[in-house]
Length: 279
Image (cartoon, rainbow, N blue to C red; front, side, top):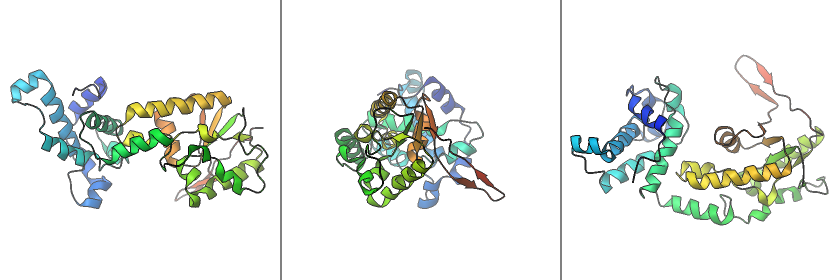
C-alpha cells in the first residue's frame, strides 16, 4: 500500500483542509442517515490518518504502525456511502477539488482491498458485457426496431458527423427506451444526420469511477473515444445526464459534446438552447 493513488496536488490539498465543517451541512448522505460520519470532514480526517501511517517520518513521530483492519473497514463504510454529488466541493472555502479526491480515495481503498463486495460484481459484469445490466451488448441499438419510420440503416452508419451516445439505461431499460426513440425523431425532423455506435458503445464508465476502478475506467474511456474517431464524428449528443457529466469532466475534449434541451427554466426567465443542424 502506498500514496500513489493521489497526485502531488491532492496531497497538498489534503494538508490545506481547514476543517470549516461547512461540508457537513450540505451532504445528502448525512441528511439521509442523520449520521455525520459519511461527511467530507470525517473522510478527510480518515485520509490524513492513512497518509500519516504510510510516511516514515510521521510513523516514527506518531508511532503509527498502519491502519488496523477495523479502521480500514470503518473508513471504507464512510467513503462508499458518498453520492459524489459535489456539494462539499461547492461550499469548500479553500477550493479543494473534493470530488476528484474522493475518487482517488475510493481507488486507494480498492487497492488496499477494503471495499464493498458489490464492487467485485460491478467489475466482473462490466468486464463481461460492457454494460451495467449484464445484457448482450450487441442489443444496444435494438430500441430502433420499435421505430416504424426508422431509416433503413437503423442509424448505424460507417461515417457521420454526429454520434448519439445512448447510454446503458436508455439502451436496455424498456421504460427508458422512449427517450432515445423520441430524441431520434426530433433529430430526424431537425435534419441532423446521426449515427449510433451500436455494440461498439461501452458503458461511459461512471459506475467504475464511483467504485474506485479508475484503471478499468480508462480502458472504457479509451475504447469509446477510439470508436468515435472511427466514425469521423465532430459532435456527440447525449440524453443521459450521467453519461454527459462523465464525458464533460473525465474524457478529453476531442469532439464537441451536447446535451440537447429545448429550454432551461429559471425562476425569472426561459432560456432557449437551439440545436444546430448537421446535414
